[in-house]
Length: 465
Image (cartoon, rainbow, N blue to C red):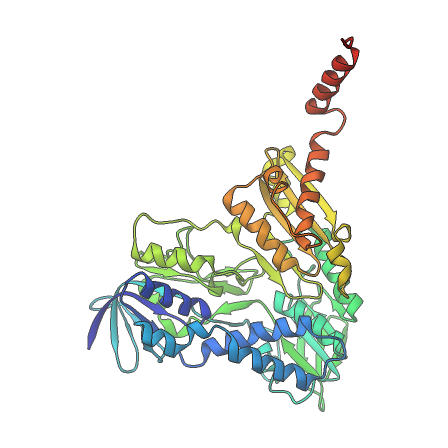
C-alpha cells in the first residue's frame, strides 16, 4: 500500500516529534516513523544528566532514580504519541528504511510510505572504540546506569564527551571513586585551552582522577573487576562506563542506497552530513537533531527543527548558522557556550575581536547558591556585535540564552547594556559586560579617548561668561 505525504519523518528523538507537530500546525500531511522506545531512551539520558548535576552530594541513589522517573512522566506532554495522533500525525511505530526503487519511499514491516520530502531525526548511541578485549568485557552506558540498584564503589569512565565529563563529576560527588580515561590530550578540544583546563580542574576538585593522552592497550576482566591497561601500567575498578562521543543510529536506514554517507568527527564518531540548509546529499532528504553533531558532538538546542522542516516544505530555503547554536555541559557549575571561542574569534578577526571576561562574583545573585562563582567570557567585534560567549557558573544555561538571542538578532553590546534587567538577577552581568567593552574602547591612547580629552580640555580652557 502506497500513501503520499507532504513530509515523512524518520524519528527516534524529541526533535522528530517536534517536527511532526510543527508540520501538522502548518497544514501538511505528515507521517512519523519511529522505532518503539527510542525517544524515551534519549529523554531519560538527558534527564538523568540534569538530575545528577543538580543533586546534592549526599543524595541517595534510590531518590535520584525516583526523581528521574517522575520527570520522565511530565516531560513533553504535548509531544506524546497520543497527542500527535489526535492532531493529525500518522504515527508508525516500526523501524523504517529507505527504498529507492521504483520510487523513493520509506518501507517498514507492514507499509510503504512515500513523501514529497523526508526528514531524518535519529537518536544517538555511544561509539564503541576499537580496544582489544572491550567487546568481551561487560560495560555500562548512561542508558543502563539506572538499572543499577546502587552506585559502584569505583568506576572507570571511558571518553571525553560532554556526557563523560558530566557523568564523571557526578559519580565522584556521589561517593564513587572515579577515573576518567581518554586518548585525547585535553578535555573539550573545541574550547579555549584555559577554559578546557578550568573544566578539568572542576573534575579534579570533585575527586575525579584524570588520565588524558592515555595509550589504551586493552581491557580485561579479572575476578569481579575491570582492568584497563594503559601503556606501562594498568588501572582497575568495579565498573567500566562507556561514554565516548555519540553517533547517530543509522545502520537500519539504508542511507547508502540513496547516496548519503555519514561523515567522521573527532576520529571515530560519525554525524549526518548536511549543508547550511540542512539538506543531505539527497536533495529530498533533510536532517535535524542530535545526529548532526555539535560543539561536543551532540546538539542541545532545537532551532534546527523548524529550519529543516520549512526547507522541506517551502521555498525559499532558510539557512542555519552554526554560530548561533548554544551548547550546555551539565556539570556543577554549568558550562555553556555559543558562537566562536576566543581563540577562534581572534584567529578569524584578528585585532577586530576583543575578549571580555567578567567574574560572576560581581553579581549578587551568584553568591546565593552553593556553587563556586564562575565567570562570563564574551568576544565582540569593534562595532559591539557578539562573536561568541562562554559562561561557567550557576545559571549559565539561562544567561547563555540571552546572549544567544542578542547574537541571533544582531544586537550590539552597547544596546544590550541598555536593556532592563531584574534587580539582583544573573542578567545583571550584561551591563557589566557592556561597561567592560566601553572601557576597552575608551582606554588611553585610542582615538575616542584622545578626541574626548581634547574636547574637554578645550571646554575647560574657554573663559566662562
